[in-house]
Every structure is written in C-alpha cells, then in structure tokens.
Image (cartoon, rainbow, N blue to C red; front, top):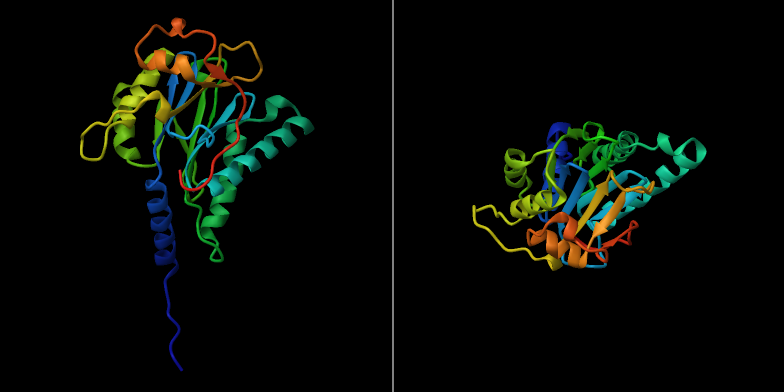
Amino acid sequence: MSTPFYVSPQQAMADRAEYARKGIARGRSVVVLQYADGIVFVAENPSRALHKVSEIYDRIAFAAVGKYNEFENLRIGGVRYADLRGYTYDRADVTARGLANVYAQTLGTIFSSAGEKPYEVELIVAEVGPAPQDDQIYRLPHDGSIVDEHGSVAVGGNSDQIGSYLSERQRDDMTLGEALRLAVEALTRDNNGGERTLTADQLEVAVLDRTRPQQRKFKRVLGRQLSRLLENAPDGAAGPAASADGPGDEDGAQD
C-alpha cells in the first residue's frame, strides 16, 4: 500500500497564494487617487464595453484586476448587498467599510477552502466623503485581508513600482487633471524603468465627485473631456459632452 502524498497546511496555503498572485500580476493595472474634489479611478483598459471600474452605490465605487468572471460575480454581489441594506435600513447605512467586510469574508472563505481554487482577483472599494479627510479607500487582496489606504493605491501588473511612484508625488489638493495625468504617468512606467504611451482610447477613467449636487457621486470621464484633461487643458474647459453616469455593464476574460 502506497503512502499518501502529504502537503503541510502552510505549504498548501503558500502555493494557493502564489497561484493567485501570478494570475493577478497578468492583469493590467488600476490606479486610484484622491484629489481635491474626490477620488479618481484610472485603468489601462482599451475595451469600451468591458469595465474594470463600476459604481456600487451613491458614494461608493469598485475597481478590480484579475479574472473578469470572478470579480464580476463579486461586483454583482456587492450591488445586491448595497441595494438590500439601503432599502431595509437607510441609504446612509451602506458604507465602503461594510462592503469591504463582506468582500473580505467571501474572499477569505474561498481562499481557505480546499475544494476550489482561490480567486485570482484584487479589489479596491472606495467611498467619497463630504470632505477629503472623510474619504475611504480599501484594498482587498486575494486572501480576503483588508488594507486601509490613503492618497493613492495601485493593483495588478507592476503595482509595487506604480504605487511607489504615486506615493512620492500624490497630493490631496490636486485638481482632477493633475491627478489623472499623474496616474497615467505611473501606468506608463514598465518594470524595466522605461515608459510607454497611453492614449485616451486605452484608458478607463471614472470619478467619485463630492461636488456633484446629485446623490450619486459616480461618473465616467469620456471622450473630449478625457482628451482635454490628458492634454493639460484647464479642468474647467472640459466641455459638457464628455461624461457618463451609471455603473455600466462589465467585461469578460482576463483583465
């Protein structure tokens, strides 16, 4: 009778973590930055139909990298949680912290389960507050841990290098244009220290804008407005026809 093959629990968890990290690293990066009037999300994503950044609730947005079908399931679950809690109690009871806790429980359960592979995803949940000091940004790796971030955060791809570049240059008093251009500068830096070029057509940009009079603070930055911001035009000259509201339908495959 052959001896069963034994793998220690520590080694098994390390192997699962390595598997998830490799899958996440294959995805194009997403950057989230605080600026004076809110929070901006910038993703390298040439698809116009498939989104890495989405609205969850009034002041809350979601960004992710990794396998689309996995983070899309999480996004849909987050929308359902927010809608149910807001309807049952009060809209103010839906918070980024509560949503991050739900995601952490889900990811942690999947990661520690021997019956299925870990999710190859890394999430960001952000909530814009009435003032910059009230903003909340949470990063959730594949194992379900929660990291409270401030100022800037990057996930996917070469996120360590991008994150270091951002942390040295991000300021809370930046305009939207300054924050957007800084995010794009960070995304264009590759692992070898060189730089690439990213155009507006290769970017997905959205903001949580605290100055909006509507209850919903999420909007996408598109078209001429995005091009003008990237070209260093004054933020106020963006024009009226360049943003779109709403969560948008998401994509498929590996992002």
